Image (tube, rainbow, N blue to C red; front, side, top):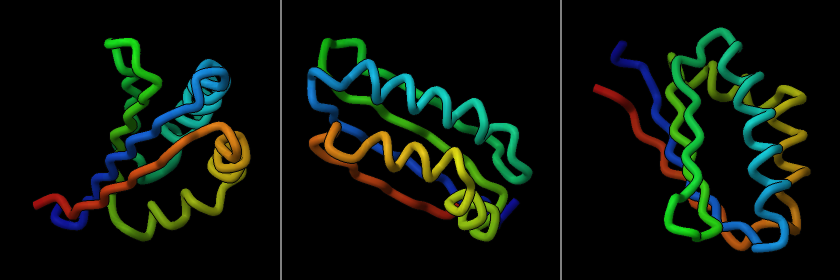
Length: 96
C-alpha cells in the first residue's frame, strides 16, 4: 500500500467544447478503471457552472500509472483534449 500514487487533475475547458471533453473523459475513465493497478478513477464536473472538471485517480504504484499512459484510451483522451481546454494542472502524490 505504501507505493500507491494519487493523481489529481484539474481541467478548465473551452466553453464550447465542455460536453465533448467531459464525454471523452468519461470514456477514458470507464476503460481506465478496468486496468490492473487502477484503484480509483473518479470524474467530478464542477456544479457551479464553471467549465472545470476534476479527476481523482489512485494507482497501485508508479509502474501501473506509467503503463496507463501508454494505452490507447489514455492516448485518445490526450488527442481529444488538444485545442479544447484552457489549462490542465496535474498533481501527483505518493500515498502513505
